Amino acid sequence: MNFVSFIVFAVSLGVHALAHWIIDKTAISGLDLTINEGTVGYTKDIMIVTIVAQVLSIVSNYFFLLILAIPLYGGYKIWIMLIWPWFTAGSAAPSDDPKSKRKQEKKEKKVFKRIQK
Image (cartoon, rainbow, N blue to C red; front, side, top):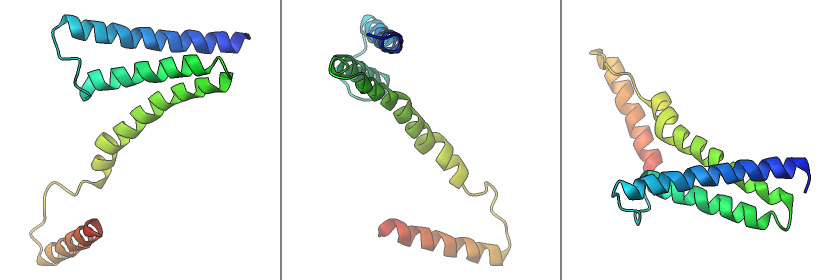
């Protein structure tokens, strides 16, 4: 086992320990651990990914790359739920100009047609 493998294993063990601590604190507070939504669901997924990566790393050290799925998925969720809606949001104050109203209605019809496809 080389030094890089040891460091990656230690990091994955730390991530797993943190996820286990979160689950433990959630259970102590009395929340339901059987739900698969929200923080509990994501924490269980993190634990599963780290366990699978650690077990498969016995075969090859490249399986530690599975742990990169955690921040990639987090970035994806942040993009979809936070950043993209902020970029695509229309202006807050609609103008009273009839031309701009017609233009906005045309744009909304285009978007609605595109969504229905």
